[in-house]
Amino acid sequence: MGITVVTNTVASQSDLHIIKNYIKNVNNIDSLSVEVPRLLQSKSYLKIIGIPYFPHDISQEHLSSSDVENIIKQNQIFDNVVLTSKLQVIKVSPKSDISIIWIDIRNVQSRSKAKSLINQCFNVERYITTIRGANMNPSVPQCKNCWKWRHTTMSCRIQGSKCIKCNGPHKSKNYCQFGWCCKANKKTNPPHLETKEDEPCLYVFKYFNCCGNHQAVCDVLKLFSQNVCKNSLIVNTILETQMSFNIIFIQEPPWSTICIILSSTSSEGEELVGIPHHPNWLTFARTLTNQSDSPRVLTYINIHISCLYFSL
Image 1 (cartoon, rainbow, N blue to C red):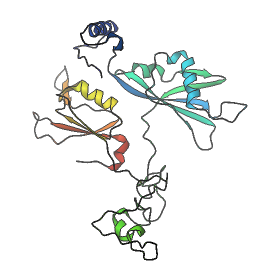
Image 2 (image 1 turned 90 degrees about the vertical axis):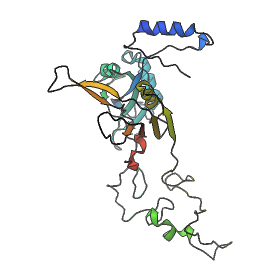
Image 3 (image 1 turned 135 degrees about the horizontal axis):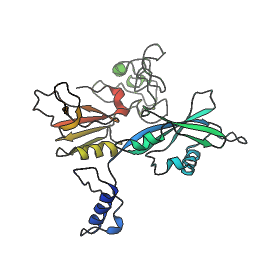
Image 4 (image 1 turned 135 degrees about the vertical axis):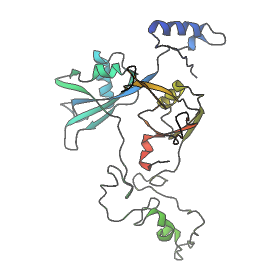
């Protein structure tokens, strides 16, 4: 459980120290369990290039994430840098011997930590490596035609379609009509009866990519809903920490000034009013009828399921 403190200005280190001492002196709170307070932070994506995929001359063991973690701990430019997820080590291409390391770091809202690391060079034994900025990894694509990984639907080369349930040579919507498990078979022992259209199929599906007991696309979605009482800080915290959910519903969302933009009529600029956005989430809201109108519920879709083409 955490405590959110709202301030009128950006808190400094001395302000954070005062907040920590105040919380420790509050009744019914164990002072030993109070952690160091920190400002609301975002996530930045970087990549390290120039490290061989097989760095060991003696053995043919490829570069692992633990090896890269040890390299980062021993280098001074990564001091005070906190990783938000496990490192990803991949080859530049299937026939290349050079690797790319994808790292996600905890950053302040001004992204000063990422800016100080981008284009920095450092030595890994006799190799010179460079840090570059990167976009968020969009994950491995899955074809919606054959349901295999590593290529998109537009680049699929098979003729026809594959069923999402039984992997048969037919479209998923025609599963009950062409699926072999829904048809009667009197030669089996005991005889297999025909599945009626209004009844679910009793066949235990086996996903052909991993042999798991599920379809090619799992139909289970994790939902999260909360009333934030028009507090943008709570919304940003939810979007940053609840990445395990697929869809988030925000009740009473904030509708306030995001920033000041240039204006052709005012030297002071114009206020840009809107809702909070996050690079890891797609935002959906109803169309507003007038300028004084504001949405009552916001829907955030995790970009990992954006391939399902959500729309209003």
